[in-house]
Amino acid sequence: MIASGYLILVQGGKILMLRRFHTGYGDGLYSLPAGHVEDKESLLTSTCREAREEIGVRLTPRDLKLVHVMHRSEEDIRMDFFFTTKKSLPAGRQGLNPKNLEPHKADDLRWFPLTKLPKNTVPYIRAAIRSFQKSIIYSEFGW
Image (cartoon, rainbow, N blue to C red; front, side, top):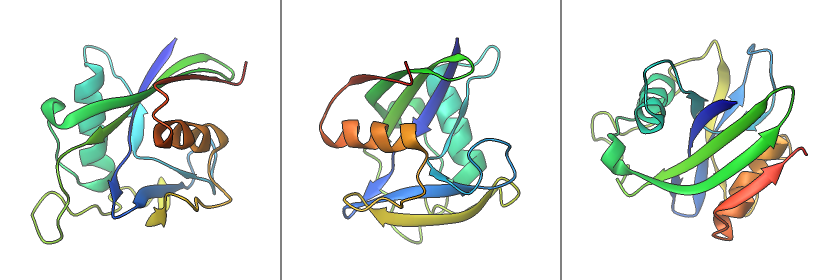
Protein backbone atom coordinates (compact mmCIF):
# COMPACT_ATOMS: atom_id res chain seq x y z
CA MET A 1 0.00 0.00 0.00
CA ILE A 2 1.41 3.37 -1.02
CA ALA A 3 0.83 6.38 1.24
CA SER A 4 0.81 9.94 -0.09
CA GLY A 5 0.23 13.35 1.43
CA TYR A 6 -1.52 16.19 -0.41
CA LEU A 7 -1.76 19.87 0.45
CA ILE A 8 -5.03 21.71 -0.06
CA LEU A 9 -4.20 25.42 0.01
CA VAL A 10 -7.29 27.63 -0.06
CA GLN A 11 -7.24 31.42 -0.03
CA GLY A 12 -10.16 33.72 -0.72
CA GLY A 13 -12.31 30.90 -2.08
CA LYS A 14 -9.57 29.73 -4.44
CA ILE A 15 -7.47 26.57 -4.40
CA LEU A 16 -3.87 26.24 -5.54
CA MET A 17 -3.29 23.62 -8.23
CA LEU A 18 -0.37 22.39 -10.35
CA ARG A 19 -0.63 21.03 -13.89
CA ARG A 20 1.37 17.80 -14.22
CA PHE A 21 4.08 17.74 -16.90
CA HIS A 22 6.43 14.94 -18.02
CA THR A 23 5.75 12.79 -14.94
CA GLY A 24 4.34 9.75 -16.71
CA TYR A 25 1.06 9.96 -14.78
CA GLY A 26 -1.77 12.40 -15.44
CA ASP A 27 0.35 14.72 -17.56
CA GLY A 28 -1.68 17.76 -18.65
CA LEU A 29 -4.05 17.38 -15.68
CA TYR A 30 -4.26 19.61 -12.62
CA SER A 31 -3.48 18.19 -9.20
CA LEU A 32 -2.38 19.35 -5.76
CA PRO A 33 1.10 19.68 -4.28
CA ALA A 34 1.78 16.14 -3.09
CA GLY A 35 4.12 13.22 -2.86
CA HIS A 36 4.81 9.75 -1.57
CA VAL A 37 6.10 9.09 1.90
CA GLU A 38 9.75 8.07 1.73
CA ASP A 39 11.50 5.47 3.91
CA LYS A 40 11.88 6.50 7.56
CA GLU A 41 9.71 9.61 6.99
CA SER A 42 6.40 10.40 8.66
CA LEU A 43 3.34 11.38 6.65
CA LEU A 44 3.33 14.90 8.09
CA THR A 45 7.04 15.40 7.48
CA SER A 46 6.64 14.10 3.94
CA THR A 47 3.78 16.50 3.19
CA CYS A 48 5.81 19.44 4.52
CA ARG A 49 8.85 18.37 2.47
CA GLU A 50 6.80 18.09 -0.72
CA ALA A 51 5.22 21.52 -0.17
CA ARG A 52 8.67 23.03 0.23
CA GLU A 53 10.14 21.18 -2.78
CA GLU A 54 7.23 21.72 -5.17
CA ILE A 55 5.90 25.18 -4.31
CA GLY A 56 8.36 26.71 -1.83
CA VAL A 57 5.86 26.83 1.04
CA ARG A 58 7.54 26.12 4.36
CA LEU A 59 5.31 24.32 6.83
CA THR A 60 5.87 22.26 9.95
CA PRO A 61 3.82 19.20 10.93
CA ARG A 62 2.04 21.39 13.53
CA ASP A 63 0.80 23.63 10.69
CA LEU A 64 -1.12 20.78 9.01
CA LYS A 65 -4.70 19.68 9.62
CA LEU A 66 -6.03 16.40 8.21
CA VAL A 67 -9.24 17.03 6.25
CA HIS A 68 -9.72 13.93 4.10
CA VAL A 69 -8.48 10.36 3.64
CA MET A 70 -9.02 8.45 0.39
CA HIS A 71 -8.54 4.71 -0.05
CA ARG A 72 -7.80 4.38 -3.74
CA SER A 73 -7.35 1.53 -6.17
CA GLU A 74 -5.38 1.97 -9.38
CA GLU A 75 -2.53 -0.32 -10.40
CA ASP A 76 -1.59 -0.33 -6.72
CA ILE A 77 -3.61 0.15 -3.55
CA ARG A 78 -3.12 3.64 -2.17
CA MET A 79 -3.97 5.67 0.90
CA ASP A 80 -4.10 9.38 0.20
CA PHE A 81 -4.12 11.90 3.05
CA PHE A 82 -5.25 15.46 2.35
CA PHE A 83 -4.20 18.31 4.62
CA THR A 84 -4.91 22.01 4.89
CA THR A 85 -3.05 24.56 6.92
CA LYS A 86 -4.18 27.33 9.22
CA LYS A 87 -0.99 29.17 8.37
CA SER A 88 -1.83 32.16 6.21
CA LEU A 89 -0.05 32.74 2.95
CA PRO A 90 0.23 36.52 2.74
CA ALA A 91 2.10 37.88 -0.26
CA GLY A 92 5.61 39.04 0.35
CA ARG A 93 6.49 36.87 3.38
CA GLN A 94 9.54 34.80 2.67
CA GLY A 95 8.85 31.09 2.32
CA LEU A 96 5.07 31.48 2.05
CA ASN A 97 4.65 32.73 -1.51
CA PRO A 98 3.76 29.65 -3.59
CA LYS A 99 5.80 29.31 -6.77
CA ASN A 100 6.48 26.45 -9.16
CA LEU A 101 9.87 25.09 -8.11
CA GLU A 102 9.65 21.97 -10.27
CA PRO A 103 8.92 23.22 -13.81
CA HIS A 104 10.21 19.89 -15.14
CA LYS A 105 7.25 18.18 -13.37
CA ALA A 106 4.58 20.92 -13.49
CA ASP A 107 4.09 23.47 -16.25
CA ASP A 108 1.49 25.64 -14.50
CA LEU A 109 0.72 26.76 -10.95
CA ARG A 110 -2.52 28.64 -10.52
CA TRP A 111 -5.32 29.55 -8.11
CA PHE A 112 -8.77 28.32 -9.22
CA PRO A 113 -12.18 29.05 -7.71
CA LEU A 114 -13.17 26.13 -5.47
CA THR A 115 -16.53 26.12 -7.22
CA LYS A 116 -14.97 25.94 -10.71
CA LEU A 117 -12.09 23.49 -10.87
CA PRO A 118 -10.41 23.09 -14.25
CA LYS A 119 -12.03 20.49 -16.52
CA ASN A 120 -8.65 18.78 -16.79
CA THR A 121 -8.36 17.94 -13.08
CA VAL A 122 -7.14 14.47 -12.07
CA PRO A 123 -10.45 12.63 -11.34
CA TYR A 124 -9.57 11.39 -7.86
CA ILE A 125 -8.25 14.86 -6.94
CA ARG A 126 -11.58 16.38 -8.01
CA ALA A 127 -13.40 13.82 -5.85
CA ALA A 128 -11.13 14.56 -2.86
CA ILE A 129 -11.64 18.32 -3.19
CA ARG A 130 -15.42 17.83 -3.36
CA SER A 131 -15.26 15.66 -0.23
CA PHE A 132 -13.19 18.35 1.49
CA GLN A 133 -15.81 20.96 0.59
CA LYS A 134 -18.54 18.78 2.07
CA SER A 135 -16.48 17.97 5.21
CA ILE A 136 -16.47 14.27 4.32
CA ILE A 137 -13.45 12.81 6.09
CA TYR A 138 -13.21 9.46 4.24
CA SER A 139 -13.89 8.21 0.73
CA GLU A 140 -12.97 5.41 -1.62
CA PHE A 141 -12.10 5.79 -5.30
CA GLY A 142 -11.55 3.35 -8.16
CA TRP A 143 -12.94 0.21 -6.58
